[in-house]
Amino acid sequence: MKQLLEQIERHEGLELKPYRCTSEKLTIGIGRNLEDVGISKEEAYMLLENDVKTVQQQIETYMPWASTLNTARHAALTNFVFNVGIGTALKFENAMAALKASDFDIAAEQLLDSRWANQVGQRSMEISEQIRTGEWQ
Image (cartoon, rainbow, N blue to C red):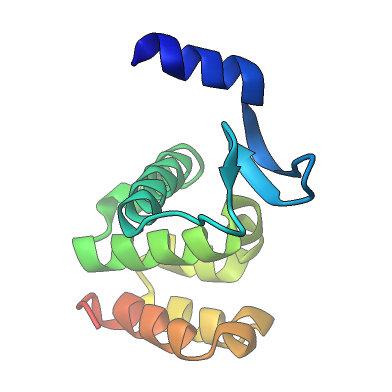
């Protein structure tokens, strides 16, 4: 099997970002045709877990104060950063300062008073309420 996989990789190449193959199909990895094959549910969850781990590492690096949050609030922050990216999350200076200061009502208000909240609707309400109450929604 190892030789077969190495041979296919040599023939297909390894692309870590989507590209159009010679048949103009959206492809990624080692010849994975996303248009016709897609990904499995298991692969989707594997990608999600990897992405959440990356977000958690970013939070540890750029928001070390987040380690003081309870599990539900930390998860809400992780969900938010997963959605907008660490760079954008850091631009929510007032919300992050309030969260850091344990002023959860203000942090929730700041998140809800944003373009992001208008864009994602119910998600913003759930995340903000989880931050406000410290309880899973």
